[in-house]
Image (cartoon, rainbow, N blue to C red; front, side, top):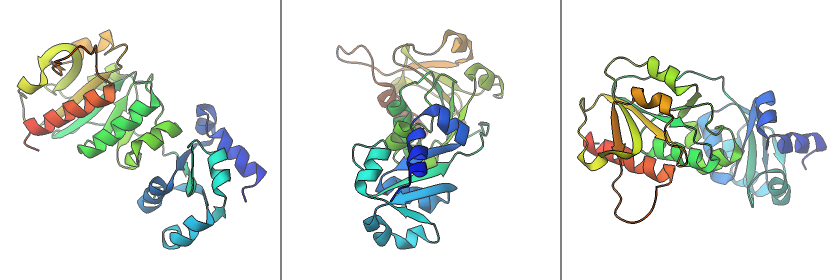
Length: 252
């Protein structure tokens, strides 16, 4: 059974203020908790149903797991239903993102919806992009909705927060910086100046687009051709399509 103090901790981690103060965050659900355990990520505590503990005793190893009912996990977590496990994980120390030739980095400008950020983490993981750099106005990566939507990809994709104009100033001269705009070069016709060298893809929010102060840092504006009447695409969908085309252009 979960104690009152443990329950208080779990409820507090629903809020960004307390996640920051305590340096902890929630990971929920069977599959994602198992990925977390296998990754070696530092843990504060694990809560699990007796059924989960019995089925995955080898994965839990020497961890002191607090037995809990599915009802407790659901009430104290953020999922609509949790029949298995909930982990309290330790936030890593912030590390700056640095670009290296041959790699692509996604730069997210004011993507403030947690579900979109989680989806983009999953997309980056799928296309082999290992780093995201986010503007301060972008959703917090340790928000439970981000963690859930990422389906474990937060374990493999490094996320950094800093003003994007400052990040752009650290890039070597000649680095390709693609910006997603409604008006830009058709991604299907895009020719990379230095194939295989990688670069940066800047994605803005659906409502605001890319901030004006970043425009002079963009080396190529790209767009996804539309054939119907929709005004715009969800940023997660647009990110996936652009990443897919970049891998196609590079023969990946």
